[in-house]
Image (cartoon, rainbow over all chains, first blue to last red; front, side):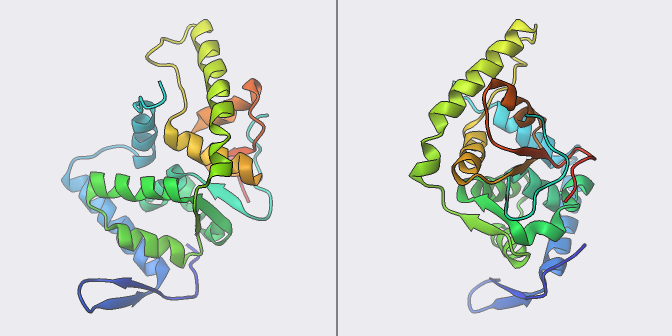
Length: 61
Length: 160
């Protein structure tokens, strides 16, 4: 994985700003998503789920 | 126009499907992490990414935004000039849907465009940017008059 060389700041609660390497932040997000999928027994790809949800969008029909 | 295998140089418009695929560690999507710094997403499709991830898996939207912005992803506001393409796209969508029904596809299984699809495709038309998506259906729209360039990140042939 190739990451940006700049750190990114995000707020983690009142008065707490965290500087993080985007590669590390993305890795943590990916790990968290994988763990939540396991816990919730969510199988399959989130991309497929997004595309299925879009097909259920009745706003234009 | 079929999906072309090699992304052109310069800016690329990415759909929520690519961003969600990256967060989901989809190997096809992750291949494109190195070019996020030349990618653009509409604010609508980025919002879709954020709410889907939070709704499904309680993923913190602020962290998702920080990660993508940190990699250099540009998030552009969606404006009126792009919205004006909705009508044209809906006509293309109707033609595509009609052709699927004629070909024997069941009404419930026929693919059509959602509002989020229209947002990404219309922005691509308005800005003349190539679009990178995981939705193969978008790649079939050229036969009904869609004039934009669409690339499928799930196709092994798509490279940069």
